[in-house]
Length: 134
Image (cartoon, rainbow, N blue to C red; front, side, top):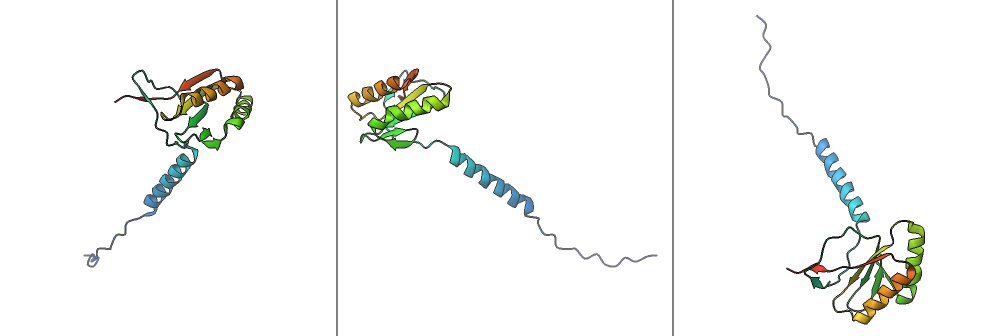
């Protein structure tokens, strides 16, 4: 009879390579999604019962309570807003929709002024963004 000797159990090591690959893929995914996400501005939107969800508009204008104006996430002044919108509409070629995010503390005259500039620049549709009342 053949003797094979005593069986010595080997210590098994866990292969961490697949787990490291998954972690790196998740890291790349979150980096890319954070780069392409639109920055949200700290604007206290007014509330309305008739608020509805609308798909993301092509152009976003925001007015903070302190009067600072943002065009697609970048600070701007009222004098440059019309030219910036005209340039955006000229290169966009698609929809000319504008969404206006105005803080509820902004004077109504300032909101109307921005809406008027958007229409002069060639905006086809203008939406005022609100939040649903709880």
